[in-house]
Length: 384
Image (cartoon, rainbow, N blue to C red):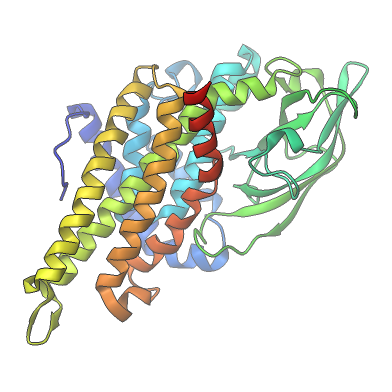
């Protein structure tokens, strides 16, 4: 049930959605609770996803992908939201929507040929290492360093809250490449997790998104060959800012899909749940609440779809993406919280998808840059 009609998708998109939906029903739904308990998704599930084109669907055919547009990525997140699998959306945002785009936009031909085909197939799982214990949204405060040593770089430092960190074979690491006291120069590096000096910390126990592995990573004198540099030296910050719109709209499209399905579940619940001798849906206060939530979802969906179209044709601007991330993640969490309220005590039970969506959706307001940072970016842009 959609609260607004959508015109983005072609017959090819619809066929892809059907295939992804069947895969999720067969390979995700029966195992999801066990993955939540374990704290990560098994590697063989990643490979199975790669076989049907779930991973990196917009990567060009030259690198093993299907060469679709960004709407194929959106479909994957929407179908994950349909079954309450927000953890997998977070994993895929990192792998397919962020890391693959960094390689495509910044990588050399050799780097693309080495890493993208196994990322598409699921044989390589990718993570991005930005956040540190003392540096989250403020990337200029990072302390991880990569110093020149002849033709190589030597990497030292640590990262935390790293999505896919437990499973990762490849980590794109953000590091300082200027000496202390100089203006901060940030560079990006492709770090092979098999290199000596690469260490994984514990799996971090989160409030939500429990099936998505999140870990600490440590780099102890890792010798990186010169071809590990992704993009230009000391140009990493500008590169990240240029690629941020894709990450922000990926978060927004996941958030609105979760809100849509939460509303759908709530509508079905109030139609059948009785109180005071009649279905909840017959109470005017419930109808008013459903109307309010449907309106929030409809307005957010229209803006997200506009952004998705812009992203799919390569013209999404930073301000629009930031507005989408801030507004939709706030609105989505509000909608899901109100939907949970309509379930009463049942909404607080882990067996109900609404409870999972509630805890999973809270992170959208934090990762990808906190919403406070998003508002600051918008304000500075408008007042410049």
